[in-house]
Length: 154
Image 1 (cartoon, rainbow, N blue to C red):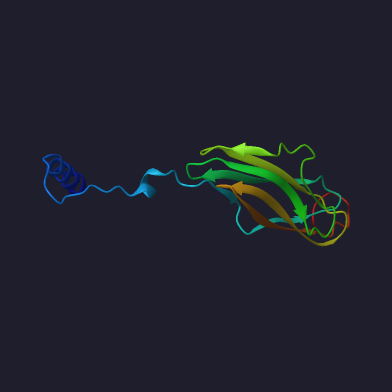
Image 2 (cartoon, one colour):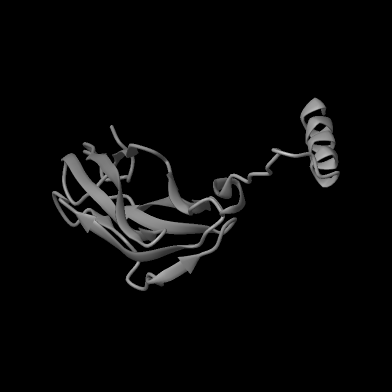
């Protein structure tokens, strides 16, 4: 509150024509904050243990724009996947422009075809404030032993 009062007094004094007093404005305050794409979860997405006899397990990635400028999502792909155990929807609506405050949910699935460890990465390619960027999320899951074939890990 004291800052506002000081600003009002300063402007009031400047309006009176005080010699040597100049009003300066920091242009960075007036410019909108650049848009940055954020993703959750961060780091790793662990599907846990899933039986190869069970239906595929669905997960979701949440994308949203932080800042005051739109972000263009140009691609979402699986990279460095150890297998086809991880999949993305075939009909991803990219490229898409997300506005500040927009959220998008991207489904992904894990369906192990055998016992073992599975790893992969989801790559999200974006253009933020005119500059290309890439976000990455590591995927992991385990195909567990299901000796009786009931779809549950032993």
